[in-house]
Image 1 (cartoon, rainbow, N blue to C red):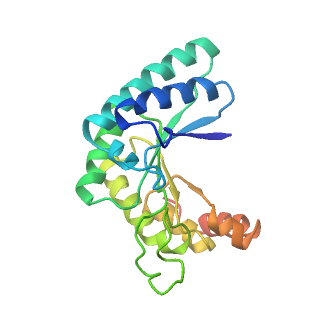
Image 2 (image 1 turned 180 degrees about the vertical axis):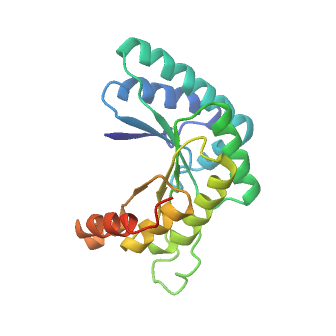
Image 3 (image 1 turned 90 degrees about the vertical axis):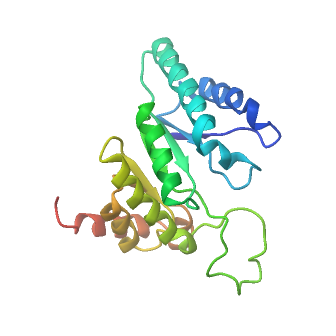
Length: 207
């Protein structure tokens, strides 16, 4: 059971760590792993927590609390950080360095996109929030490739974004992901997408 945690929409960024730590304490005993969401496009200003001192202080606080909770509950619950697809190569490198420095257990690439590229003709392209599904596929895969290069196997990458066919899941693995997650594709294609994805991944050349 993966549990996603984030700050409240009305919590200022300078107090964001308090929200994340509160959530981590509350879910630790139930979770198989915890996703630290610093990339939701629906929370104003949240994505600034993905970089530099803001990210580093958050990760340090979470790792300290993770160790404390592991002692209290006698079990280690991995932490994965979920990042945005709308990042430059330099920004991805910065994030990767922070993840390695604080020995984060995994990274989820990626969240939904703020871009409306390719869907300009849609009657709802102007709606607020993140865009999931096929329009985010290439952005997500690009970030996975960049992360794989920067991390060099230091931690697992969970690939997510635009998996609507088995081929898409295999593409994430080829780009450097160890695991994949499916959301929009599962809604539209149903459980058969899982079977198709497993078969496509199994058909990849063994490395």
